[in-house]
Image (cartoon, rainbow, N blue to C red; front, top):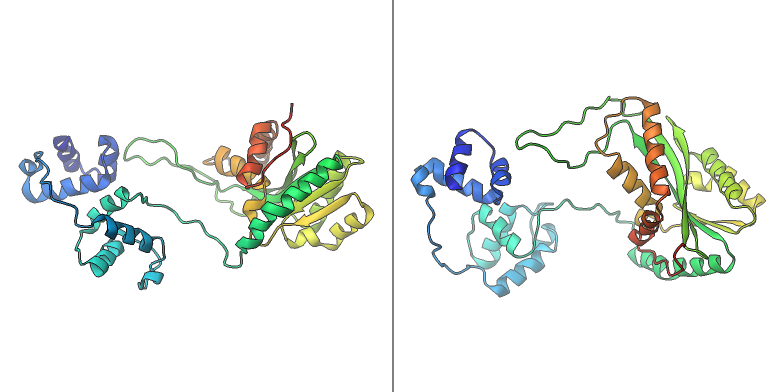
Length: 335
């Protein structure tokens, strides 16, 4: 295997590509490359492990884990990211052990760490309020709606863009796949939609209004409310969405004043993960339509419509969106 690695190194292949081809860790390939370039092919011959004990003992690894669960700033560094070199500096400072940054990656893997992209979260987010909403507000609303044979909708907007979202796909080693697109970043198809739960039966519907090359404002939000009222005549309707200004516009309040069976509920601020319809947007925009090569707006509209219809016909997927939002469905499954 090391001979093959040396041959690929001579061909100019990157260590990450060699590692993928040989199914070894990239750090291993980088170590082979340094050895090969410094001392030739003979230096790559397999050797028995020296049996040298780990320099970091179990207690030190536990302590290191606790430190790495904090930010670098909390550990006294003027940095935002934990890099292998910075962790090597931390180990040297705390335990007096000098590791090469490449070896730090091996240690981190042994400790259960992986290289990850952080999730962003607003500082204004109130976690206690969000958990209380899941634990108290949602079950009470579900119970009330079931008793009234009503319907609960969770709504929001999404924009399907001409510039596609990009997702990992398969490709040949050292040949990165290309997603061609037309550079019309301002062009999009806005969708105002909602997943509609029937608590008495467990059925879920998906309603979507499309607004090509437009935005969702108060007029569009009011039109969506009228559609919801027409879809569920004579039933009590509880619609949950976020605090977007369009959702509180005068024209929306006018619809509410004229239809007492419709009640609007607003999610806690900065909590999109509470909204089950976000799962629908994830399934369509960020999964099924990722890497698209659509060049015309009408095609984008048609594809978004097709994928949303497919998701809307799958009860299992729609119910999983509530589960993904942490909202328990304690009522009967649809027959």
